Length: 388
Ligand SMILES: [Cu+2]
Image (tube, rainbow, N blue to C red; front, side, top):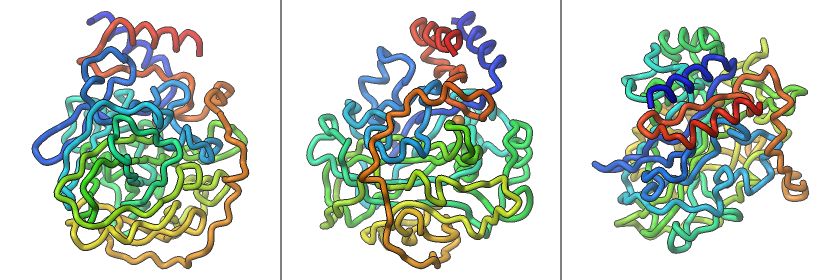
């Protein structure tokens, strides 16, 4: 055990790369459901988790704009057809807390990461958070989400009424992943998540009918703006969490939007450039469809999610953010998407050419959850390292 930890630590330290991560656990009411061990299928946690397996921190790790039009990647990071065995009970009108864990210890015990000390915090601080939902049409443990229609419950971009904490700003500078805006207001949803102990809260609408549903919880990290390198652009980390909603209301979900149609691979969102001298937090637009109008009063709004309406894809809502109470102001516009006609890009291995991008796909050396360190994942990590 100890020597394997050492190996993992050594591998991590020899890598320039920033890590990625996965869901550590999801809690609701008084109970907590552990996320899957994505590095070791035989872990007993995997027989009782409600969260579908995400990509490992090595290739492909996340979905880039080149994968935005691919349902198999965008639905659940490749787990659209691979259900988790369990569901989490939650009453309509209540919430779930999703806790993220970094694949590396870059932010462990660093300033601005909340009270989290027992495992690795999430490692990126610039980016959006989106929450979608779909019906499992019965049992989530049998549900193929590949062509599911997703309804947006909440989204958050950058809150210009707040600033990042001095502690986290300084931590990100040292990572190094300089936080933009470099001074003044502009709290990215992802920075809020890190400051809150790598936690995000999703409110389940009180109007929602009882039944089994899946949350598509998505972090979009924008620290590596798109350029000629095929591994650049927003990095989408997608967790699908299976819920059993109880004591619901009378509303069924609308038909929703397929995952491949959520974002344009060439739109404003795919090309957002936080490093640009002209980057203006007040002009950041939240991509994707509008928030469901069934999301209303009922919920407490304490999660920091925007309940305002987003706009379709590349004509999204402005500002947008948690807690500001600001109504989105941008005009609506019909979607013009090439998504449907674009062939699916199975770009699972396109990351191998990268040598400089932060959080590139190939070369990270993920450290499995310490309590689950097994020979198998360690060996695989080692192989990954050697082959990258
Ligand atoms: Cu990452």
